[in-house]
Image (cartoon, rainbow, N blue to C red):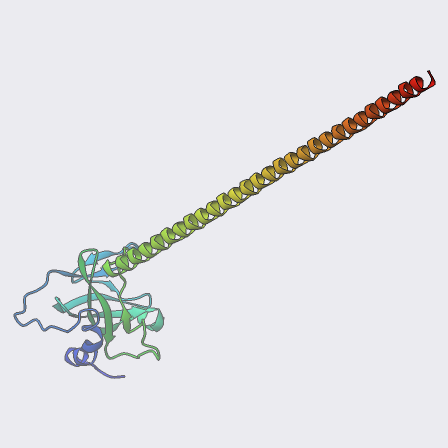
Length: 248
């Protein structure tokens, strides 16, 4: 066991607590205060509330303090003393809480209010082997998103919307290509149909010409045969007449 004074606690924990989330620890020596600062307290309030200099404080699910007296409060750090109890030190600390010093730091703006977000607890009492979330850790915060988280969600929504737009553009472009391909196929089919129709007309015309030529040839053949038969008849008649004259 060891005794740690407020000054020693500030010296050992301020770099990890006070500086976290606030950039640089600023001493309260005439610097203009940035406004009121709160701690989000779940003590006696399941939904939590914004508290300033609370008499009772839930630091984490493992540690809480009562009968707090604050030696310092804001704007970048807070130091108080009170009675410490928690699940990690039961059953002894439940009936006889430990005297402890708590430091708050890590200021951060949440929904327009500044809150402490880090805590550290020290004092003359048996320490657990694991201090994380028992004697040092993150304080509860409001359920509502802070500005950084809102910005992250807005950016994610923008990306999702942009991806959705890109998908719709791609689908539209693919649909246009498919329609263009369909139009090309229909045009090619129409062109092939026209070619087939022209071929059919050419074939029919050629067949008609052949039929006409054959008809003319047949008519010519018939005329020749008739003419030759007529000439033969005339020759035979002339022979008969001549022979008749001779006999007379």
